[in-house]
Picture 1: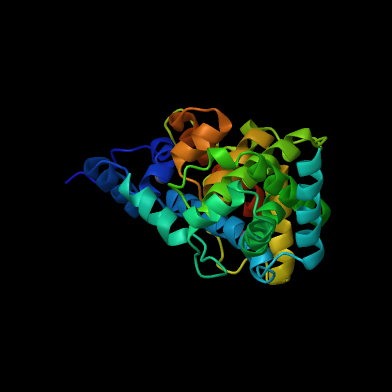
Picture 2 (picture 1 turned 120 degrees about the horizontal axis):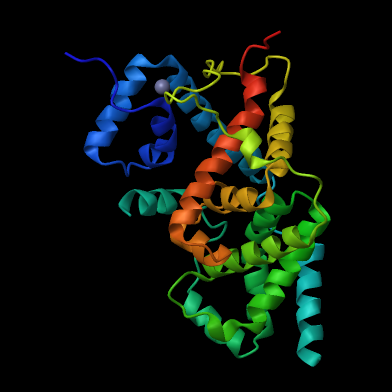
Length: 89
Length: 213
Ligand SMILES: [Zn+2]
C-alpha cells in the first residue's frame, strides 16, 4: 500500500475548478480525493475556495433579491420617453 | 458540457411575470407598437436593474445602464432571432453595456493578481499551508456588513479577473458565452476564472481564519 498521493498540492489546486464542475477524468478525480484524505492544507484551500464562491454569489445576489420586483416607475417612464425621443431623431 | 448546462438552467432566475409569447411581442415591437415597448420595459426592467446593480454597484449608474440597454435593444430588434427568450437576450445586452461602463470608469489602483495566488515550494507544497476556515467568519461582523465587505473585495480584483468572475459566477453565463462576450478563448476564460476565485479567496481569507500574530 502506498499512501503517498499521486498529485502534488500545486496540481491539486490547479484542478479545483474542474473538480467542482465535474470535468476531471475519473482517475485524476480519485487521485484528487485521495490527496484530500491526507492533506489538511488542501482541504482548507478547497473549503475556502468554495466558500469564497458562495460568499461572492450571496453578496451580490442578496443585494438585489430584496429589491427584485419591478423597475421604479420613474425609470420605466424615462426609458419610454427616451425611446420616443430617439425615434424622432 | 452537461454539468454546466444543468447548472445554468437551474440558476436561471425565475421571471417575475409569467412568460409571454416572445415572438408575438417581438413582432409588435418591430412594428413600433407603443404598448409593446411599455410591456417589455415593465416586465424586464426589474431584472435588468438587478443585473446592472450587481455589476456596477451604484444606483445611478445602474439606472443609466438599464436605459441604455433598452435603447440599444430597441435599435437592434432585427437582431433578435427569437431562439432565446427576450429576457435572456436583454440580459446579455445589459451585461455588455455594464462591461463598457466598467471599462470607462477610472479605476482605483488594483491588486496584482500574482500577489493573490498561492505560492509553492519546489516539492509542490504550498509555501504557507492553508489554515481551516471557520464556518461563520469573524463573529464581530454582521451579515449585511459581510456582504458589503465581499463586494468591496470583488471590486479590488484586477479588472480582467473581476469581469470573468462577474459573468461566470454571478451572472451565470457559461464558459462559451463568456468567451464570446470578452473576446477570449474558452480555455483562457477557465484559467482566468480559476485565478479570480483564488484571488477572491485570498482577499477573504483573513476574515475566516484565526488572526495570527
Ligand atoms: Zn495538498
